[in-house]
Image (cartoon, rainbow, N blue to C red):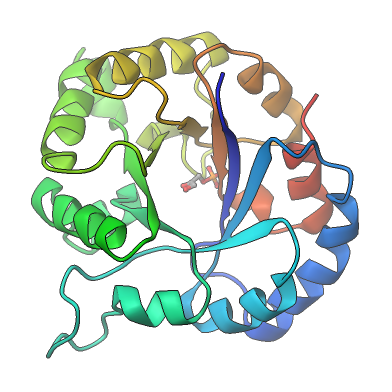
Length: 241
Ligand code: 13P
């Protein structure tokens, strides 16, 4: 296991005021977290500025949940890399399954977003994962290989994080068994040019299963949805045994 990175994905939760309340309880709880663990909070665009200010000088980095591939232009409702950089954002989630499912992200647009993020000095977190139907049909490896191969075309693997998030485990409380997550992540690693890319597991990570997940040799971190919304719960995850 190389660089450990534990990221919270707040999705469409938390106003600025709620974000500040979170920080006040969260920061003291991670003051003794081992220094080799990178902690990231991926917040809604509207909370990024106050989070950056509140986290200035701390060891917690700020991440966004999406980025547009053009530098600027007539793209109503989109946010550019420069806008994120100005706010002190360092990471950005790309190709989350909710964006693929509800907002039309494809492997091609995911690829464009990844490249833009890197060209602008941000570290993208590429999400991949199969549906329940695809898993039951024995298609898991094929689906993920396509997402990896097409998503990473021309992408620099030295500035990249990958998150394996089986869609059936997201927000369901139904975690992928640790050994199975480890197996799939090992398969993803074999497809990469750079075996040192940190690969996270995501999908119902919680205090009760994080220790077992993080004990797996291929799993370098976690991407945490629901359980990242409460400061004490997320701190317990960050401080896994
Ligand atoms: P949950 O942890 O709520 O299952 O969400 C996982 C996720 O989608 C993180 O990006």
